[in-house]
Length: 86
Image (cartoon, rainbow, N blue to C red; front, side):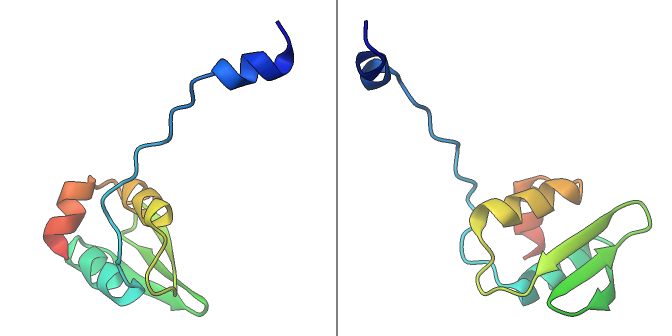
């Protein structure tokens, strides 16, 4: 079987898209502040901490869905918990 034929018959799974679209950096910062994080530094990115964890939030409107999901995971929250804070 040729390589082309194998590739043609391969099944690809797309990653599951988190449901966090359209979150601005300001809304994200407010939500993380409600969760116990505080702003330590601001520039092109905002750095927040809760002593245990450090988060870096880009100043983008809106923040990319996959990027936001990663930040929420780094914060130790679930997407549902984060949505409640927004």
